[in-house]
Image (tube, rainbow, N blue to C red; front, side, top):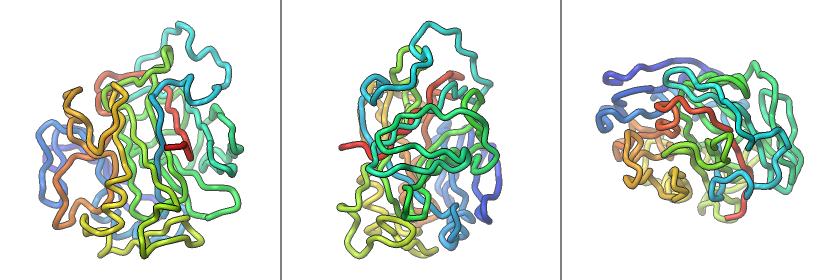
Length: 308
């Protein structure tokens, strides 16, 4: 990956890599210099398209202006008091708290913590996990059985620890819920950095023609090695058009705005198709680059099934 530092790992047979600094090469197309981005390696697409276990799930997003108070009542833990938060390690964010707000009509199961969050509940997720360390994965109780997920691109065990990576969506399998993730300042509740989050406004009602529900997803893209290598496909364009980057000023766009310039400018927050596709546009993919550069302490807020 050019001069990037890449970390390879495996999850249910699917390799994944994270390009943590400088340059990322996407199937021979090199992103702009100094872009830090997350990248699912080519073998991951081939293996992941064939997986049928819990790792074969996708992810979706939500909306809001990035302040904690708007998103419902959080558990009372003194979050907005003046606290001396610990600085993260170099190239990392310190996730002081992990909060899940479930606006879905059903409860959700959160993989790794053996934790259920009821419909309408906002929960502070505590404790350490020992599985699914490279993702945040959830599914609706009573099905479909597939997990939607956020790709963390680095191992993260839970609140109170560092994440030394740049999260993104990777939704080429399909989806069951919409979602949003944000890095919020622990004291103010405001967006913590220039590339603070992302959202997907997927819905079963807008599932592209030719696709639909299955036992795995409310909208199953039936991914194959060939289908994920076409960025002009119906399902790829659907993902592109329904994914938004959340900038630190609260604005939403398909790519990060140049109004808050930096290494993240112009990045996507999702992989709607494989980067080795012949028509891959050459964009960087990744979020929280500004957060990790500044070694921020943050609250990781995930909102499920928000209204758009």
